[in-house]
Amino acid sequence: EAGVAQSPRYKIIEKRQSVAFWCNPISGHATLYWYQQILGQGPKLLIQFQNNGVVDDSQLPKDRFSAERLKGVDSTLKIQPAKLEDSAVYLCASSPRPVVEVVGDTQYFGPGTRLTVL
Amino acid sequence: GQNIDQPTEMTATEGAIVQINCTYQTSGFNGLFWYQQHAGEAPTFLSYNVLDGLEEKGRFSSFLSRSKGYSYLLLKELQMKDSASYLCAVTDSNYQLIWGAGTKLIIKP
Image (cartoon, rainbow over all chains, first blue to last red; front, side, top):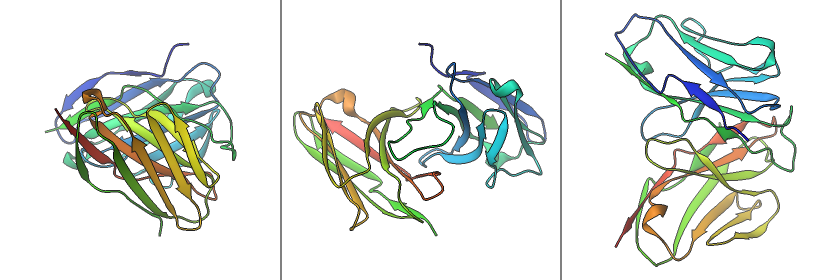
């Protein structure tokens, strides 16, 4: 099966500019995640969707970041305006089940978008 | 607060065995994952533990002790391609995945 697709792979912008990232999860996966990963750190969850509803966006800087998941499939993450500290890799992941159960719902990651803010 | 601790970096020799430890303090526990992440690539799933004990999968094994809040990933017969970061992540009581910062493993010939 096809994996999680993300685009673009790389993006360089100047501070105060806007940028958008796109993610297409694995077909049929109910849950979609956006992570921010700064070099040398673990992924930080920005937002989690179950189908097209938001489950958790507690760590999303809502003054500049926004995300949507249209029709419960593709998702976009936008930053407006960007700051220097937004330089990171933005990872999209999807998992099959609506709710993580005790069995363990593996997350499948896309290749990520490496954002550099100058 | 929720916290996951892993060593920042480890070095091992090709063909040897290495153990990467992970300790966690989270609000509830619903399983622990290990992911592998090569430089510049996305994390890929290695193992999942929800019950105490050892799970073996080829050259990789993962151990869990819930009472101690402790896990380790054991890599045997190390190969150069095992050079990567290894991320420990715990599912808390709200089924949210809490990630460690990762352990960078360097394999030397």
